[in-house]
Length: 382
Image 1 (cartoon, rainbow, N blue to C red):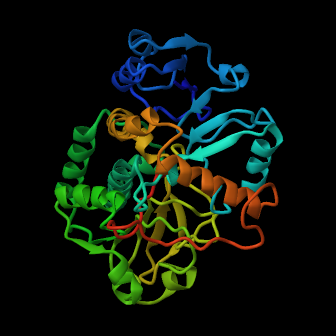
Image 2 (cartoon, rainbow, N blue to C red):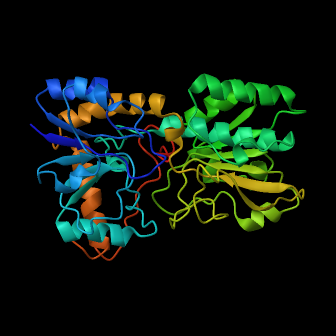
Image 3 (cartoon, rainbow, N blue to C red):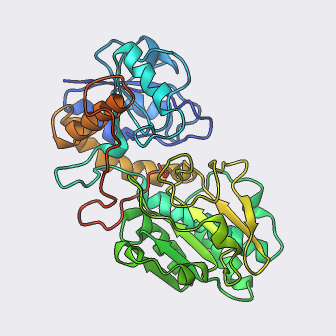
């Protein structure tokens, strides 16, 4: 049986959890041990985990956890300690050469620790087993549309800051209100529309009454750039794991025919060499959800929103969906193709950094698609 250690998240705005109390109870009932760090951020109360059979400990206790503990989380670790000794399961965003990837891998190397990145937990067919993708797409599209409509109505709204919503109804009600006041409904394009993230984006935009253009691999194989730039809103839901696709460049924004004035980059990977939207170089945040990227061809402001933990704005729904899909994998740790796939990605990335076994000296070219799903799903999504 496995000792699981659910840590308090380091990021102040992260309210999600990879395992909800109901599934924690199932984990314990299956004979596993579960330790849960107290948290004043997590969407579920500490007491609910205690009632599920978990042992509660102070936040940050994972530093001194037994070496056989598997440390569970959602987002990145704090900067300390310098050496990571345990087995960790979270979204680290360092396997695609993002900024600081070698330094973060060096921490695992220094402590002989292991990272099972959730983004790379895939089955034999390459399908991810657990993701926050749907809610990332849903919220990213909603915030992009909300900002575009508010701007046209002369309102500040989400441009100033965002905070967790009470649920789906609050968001859809606000969008319905804004659409009803708008002189015209914007046109929207979702790229990566066949993936879970894309399906979430299409759903919320369609529910708001927009005509949505849906593109996936077939449409981007021979990109119609003029058609792309003629939309008011672009939602990018493509998970890039290799080079090849560029959607919008600074030069594209300046083209006289460009009407695009709002981009929602759900995938949000601006620091990767594979970024398909090289019009910005840093994620946006809850306190700065939108940044100006220049005027478009019509002389109007063009903005982008790229929040890298979108699902935490709807933490209850996002955590519940994720946990349902994640629990079966936890019950068979460390066996199963998903754990082998994530471990292989870790070792290969260490090798590229000159820190361990694997195929060093080259960048792995991983397919852009997940089998049967069109473009892969974003996690920023995560």
